[in-house]
Length: 334
Image: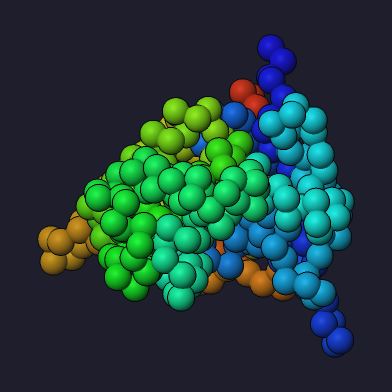
C-alpha cells in the first residue's frame, strides 16, 4: 500500500557548525516524516541532536556558524505545493514561520517578550501573517487564549508573562503557535518545567488541537512515558543519528536497537528489585558520544551486546518488516 505524501519529509539531513578553528556536525543523515493529523515523537537523551533538527526545520539555526550542509526538508504547504525548506530564502522562511509552521519552545519565560502583554504578542503575529487591523487581531488573541482553556481570556490578554504561572505561560505559547492555524506544530519538550498534573493538561490540549485542526505534530522529548501517551510514530536519535523508527505500538512491543531497549528499560515500570527490597530504576551507563568521537557504531561504548566489528564498522540504517528502520548490525540476534 502506498502511503500518502507526508506533511513533513526530512531526508538525509546534515547540520554543520563552523568556527575559525574547526567544524562539527551534530546531526548527520537524519530522515523522518510527519503526516497530517498524526504525532511523530523524536526521542533521545540530551545532546542527541533533537533540538538542532527542529531548529533546522524552522530555519532558526544560529548564523553564520550553523548551516544545513546536506539533505532536504520537504514541507507540504496549505496551497498543496511542496517546498524544500533547506533551500528557501530567509525572507520566504520568515513568512512561513507562524503561518504554516509553528514551534513551542521548552521554556516560555525565555520565549515571550517580558515588556509586552501576552495579548499584544499574539496579536502582533496575527497582524503580520493575516493583515488584520489591531482590534481584530486582539480579538483573535483573546479567542486563542480561550481556545487553550485560559479562564477569563479577555482579562488575561492584558497581563504580562511574569504575572502568569508556568502552566499558563505554556498555554500562551500554544495559543501563539496556533493563532494562524499552522499545518505543522513542533513541540520541543513543552512540559519539561511543569509539574505532573499541568503536564497532563498540556499534553491533552496539544492532542485535542491536533485532532480538531488535522495538524501534524513533531513532539521532541526524552520522556518515553510521554511518548507512549501522545505519539503515533516514533523516531529515536542517538549522537546525531536516527537509530530506530517505527509506529509507537511496534516500538514499545518489539524494540530492535539496544539503545531503544535501554531507554524503555529506564522507565519506572521496568524497575528491578534492589538488595534492600526497594525497586531500583535502571540507567544507561556512560554518556552520549560526541558527534565525531566514535568511528564505528556510536552506541558501541555503552552497549552490552557489542562485537569487535561494532567498534570499527558504522552500521547503515536498514528498513525491515512493517517499515520499521534500525541502525544496528546485530538486530537480527537481539
